[in-house]
Length: 433
Image (cartoon, rainbow, N blue to C red; front, side, top):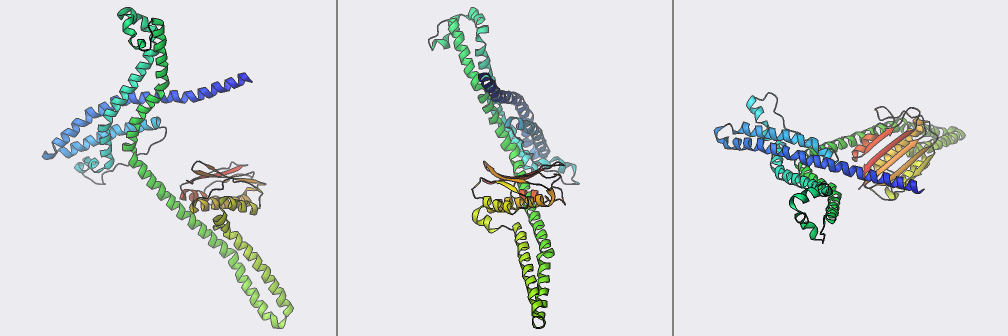
């Protein structure tokens, strides 16, 4: 029991330490390699930039300035490739302006002058140099101090013989250490402290440089991606609502509308029969009443595609409970989320759950299903699984088509895992906070 616990603790320690060591290695390599890169950028770009400014008056300055901007873009591209490894996540790619079709040589050569991202790249190359120098100095200095102190006992005696012990003990004497052995222990202890802090120090130095790059080199690209995502979400919402309205219109036309036409005809026939054959008229009216009940039930079924009062009044968890209770396939519900959310989020989750349960009943041949609603931080997660035959997917013409559009309309995601033979699992995540 104790041995097993020790092995588990050691495995947990290794799992915790390994990422830090790798992170320290990545940060160190980044700071060391970025210094010569930024130095090369300054050496190559600044003279060209200065020449371009100096020759503006004689007419050749604009192409030279554009050349400096193109060089800055090249160095910026190298930095963008390095940023994801340091930051731990992908970064956006900015959009550079391109010359219009049919532009002449001069027009094409000065195209960078009109691109905002080109100028941000140039600004980055100028600002990053002093930051790179500081990051490089901190990284090299901290590594040097760490290694020099940790291995001091291996070389200290050589230095001692060369320069004397008193020159090596100036720092240890501050804490009352007077001999070589205690000096060795002192330096190794200091080295261990430096080693403990090393991952944090080199990481901070690398992040200082990387975050400047993220702001200047990717912020505009992130804004463009955000705009594109919002446009896609808006288009998805419009498409989902249009599909819902078309389906509702078709269902009403094929169901309740036909029933109402038949009901009107039956009531007209009963009216004509009242004087001639009251008994037949009463039978016709009884049939019409039965048809009315069936029509009302069909209208209630169709209204599930519209936000029901229970969703508005009592919240998402209660609305999902009502859906599960009405499902022809037995549904186990787990929805311990009493919180209320925005109307858009609640409606989307409800509609996706309703449509997914409808598809389970129509197509899955399942004996049971499980519906789960949970919240993790600022994400709301809806999961529906069944033990049916599988084969479901999000392609057009299938039962789950349109659900992904509904999820995207509130900046969410929807995935379906449904191998042939089952089981089927539908998971939707939407932001909720």
